[in-house]
Image 1: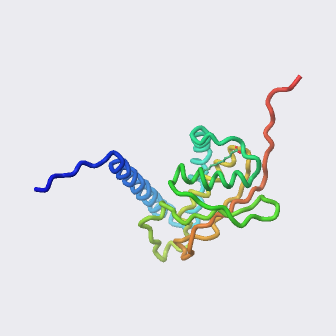
Image 2: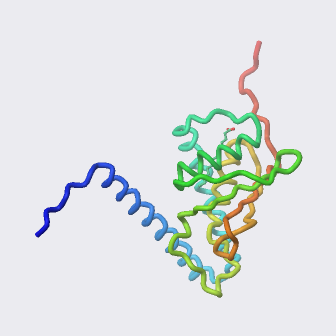
Image 3: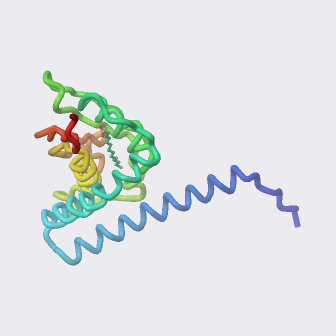
Length: 185
Ligand code: MYR
């Protein structure tokens, strides 16, 4: 029998990471499948995924701010960059790009070429109206709500719907100025 070569720590670690990522992807798929069974209507599933994402986002922001050491962004452009480059990297292991800014800097697209949520996924014809990754738009909306930014997050392009990439439009609806809680004398 050929001797088994010892694997380096890096190889073991990257294997664990890969297995974790696959488990995460498959678990998400199982959740979507269960929602489709329970709710029957694809629109209801879209709403439910968005709500689940929102509930995650309002909690995840604390972890994000604590781990990323990101300080207050000067404007929405910086916020969008932070989401694309730091947020997606931290939670999904991929980075995204930010494009399609409108003139007043309140609406942009976040474009994802890689999206681990859809590895192994193929939608049957009965699910054509499904926004399979709707949890992500909810996460962003929830996280931004917690830092006083009301947003609307909409899927513009979706690989599972035959597009070449995933594109999320993030529109800043309202930014609530944070009040300094103490009066200066
Ligand atoms: C600020 O307070 O100005 C900083 C705001 C940073 C918001 C970052 C939100 C991160 C959302 C992560 C989304 C990950 C999706 C997988």
